[in-house]
Length: 150
Image 1 (tube, rainbow, N blue to C red):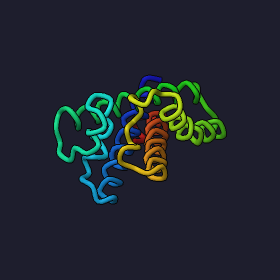
Image 2: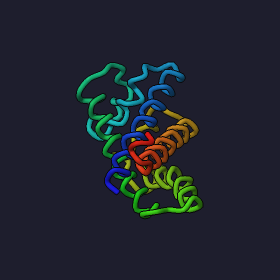
Image 3: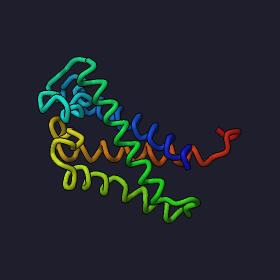
Image 4: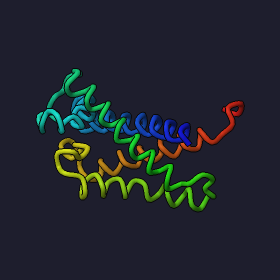
């Protein structure tokens, strides 16, 4: 169980981070702004405007994103259960992104949202959630395979 959580959080963080960096560049911004915006809970909305790598914004943004993905990985693991069949795994995985977005932006106090809304459109944020879910699903699946087949 712990292995699947760790793997899911790791790969979810990687794919989410790549999506944030790539989308920021696609928008004509510095790539790091996609990461820095997540530090808005500590640095305020100016975090999204910060276009250099630094401890206060970039490291905080990455650490915050990883912590959030660890939280979602635990919930994902609980929803999947010990030995999910394919239909259950598919349904839980498909629900993960919309549920995460709903909780992140409708339930969570504004100060503690991911901060992506400071940089990205709703459609772009949807792509970030999709990347996150794909990474988490890959990580969970990878952890289930025997070590010799990896």
